[in-house]
Image (cartoon, rainbow, N blue to C red; front, side, top):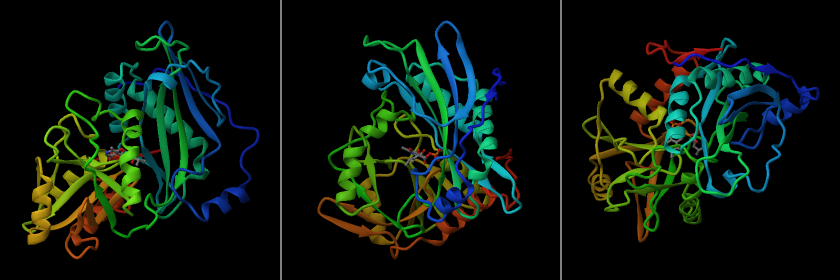
Amino acid sequence: VQTATLDFEIMPTSTPTPEADRLKAFENLGFGTLFTDHMAVIKWNVDKGWHSAQVTARTPFQIDPASSVLHYAQEIFEGMKAYRTADGRAVLFRPEENARRFNESAHRMAMPELPEGDFIAAVEKLVQLDARWIPEGDSSLYLRPFMFASEVFLGVRKATDFIFCVIASPVGPYFKGGMKPVTIWVSQNYTRAAVGGTGAAKCGGNYASSLAAQAEAAAQGCDQVVFLDAVEHRWVEELGGMNVFFVMDDNTLVTPPVAGTILPGITRKSLIELARDNGLTVEERPYSYDDWKADAASGKLKEAFACGTAAVVAGIGTVKHQGGEFKIGDGQTGPVTTKLRSALVDIQRCSAPDTHGWVHVL
Ligand code: PLP
Ligand code: COI
């Protein structure tokens, strides 16, 4: 991890949310609608570099209508969580992986890289100040580091000014159905990313371009869209906001390879290791939609699941497509999915030994 270089000015708000209001809001946590009292902010300028690091009251940005992000979408983000352990500690899960991926996204989008130590320090300082906002039990504090071009300029080139920010949102389950298996829609009309494009970067534009496909999925009664590759429209890539795994009848796990068009998920990477720890064989290889259908019909495919920071691990019960639908197994969350989910969650919440050194105690 690159060392931290910045000193943060910590300025707690003079009007914190009353404790009774916070407790009321915690009674019914959804995803991404409730926010904590503070935010971390760091500015970048082509002359000064990174400067003015602060943790301060969460407040709207004033940005000029000509700010380049509003026109050319120079924006990247991360998604990570702080967890409250049973013994009351606050922990992060593999934050150095988020810091590294953030810089890979920055590189692809011609944005300045933030030293990994400063990225982690910004997250840590925000979580420390807003520690009372980390829910207990199955809920968590979702953290959203992001960076955007703030230069006032309409020419098309990389900007000279950027703002990095971290906000925090106490969250419950990502899917409304909670732990119920999800239904996914196979997009025939849209693709997400092509070789040489931005598929491996966590940039806002990837999500903007996924929304029409996600809306189609929702109109079909599905929770998420799954994208096929852009060239042959044949190979399974990933969901709108999650990676995907297939569990075969010989206890082999298949997941599409990270080859530039999908997001290299940290949950994905962790589950591959945990699966191997549990004696499963993992194959990172292309898997076609035709095989998916055929293997579901023949029973060779036992389970499928989606995974990501927001969604954790969610069994896929039903797959819908133009002209029909098919079930995976009995349409319920399968035993391998359940076992891997527990293996991951138990480490994240410190109820199992952290043999990989993934937990970062605050
Ligand atoms: N794929 C996409 C498109 C995502 O948005 C996410 C979520 O961040 C993932 C995969 C899973 O990544 P991670 O496990 O690092 O959260
Ligand atoms: C995350 O899991 O952090 C994501 O960014 C995905 C999005 C669906 C919230």
